[in-house]
Length: 204
Image 1: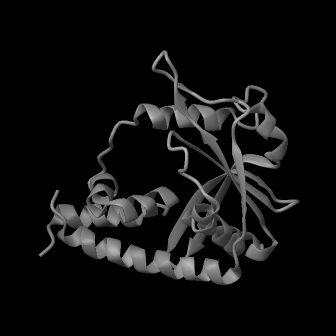
Image 2: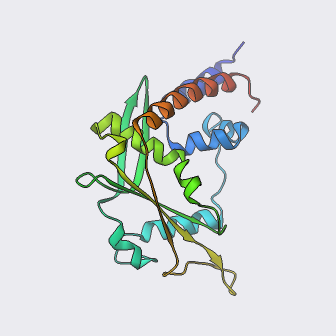
């Protein structure tokens, strides 16, 4: 028997938009997901996350920490996507997207040198989710998108601070198909059902 409090927690979760962050949290750890999305608790951002936000915020601006990447980042920065799928809303913010040329850029930082490879980019669900949302909302065929993931390595300097080399980055090109997106939509639908069932039994 669900308690009144647990029912309220689940209903509140159902009112939330579904983001890639939530899906990736679930895939990484179901308990971590429940801690954040059912029990509404938050871990403090670590140094790497905060620095990644600083780097990402600078890209595509006159103050870019990787200025040579700027000409590649066409379109609108932090392009908002929100679209209804079934009875839930999906929400995402493309780092850069141009509705005219259909070019999508996502930027990533990491201290792990081999964090991103062509294979990992081809399999990355966040890009598939954005392609799905553009398909559902704007009727953009995934095959017509030009998609890039831009990887900026992060290092720790002698001052024990995080740094990026403005000349060091990798641009990975990838594609998505309509089938990829439809399968990802089915994955989201199943995952949301699994999340709800888990939320009924997980201990706080």
